[in-house]
Amino acid sequence: MNYLDRPEVDTGYVEPVLDGNAHKILENLFLGSMESCHSLDTLRDNNITGIVNCCPTRCPNAYERDQIDYCIVSVNDE
Image (cartoon, rainbow, N blue to C red; front, side, top):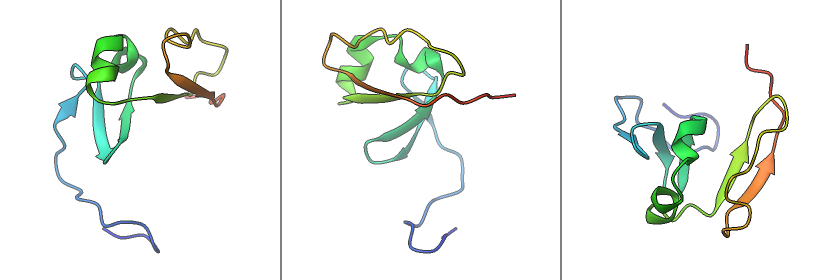
């Protein structure tokens, strides 16, 4: 599947990563639940240095002091 100038993406099954709570979308881009960010060791093992926090209200950013950058985007997921 291809949209405009975006990279070609395989639309088949993608094996979960990050303790089974996320999927690798592209190299260095993961999509996952809050549970996928609970282990600093897992984040570091996957070279994750930033997290987009999409909570509708202010949620704690557990690893702000551990060299993980956060971007907060308030999203109401209904």
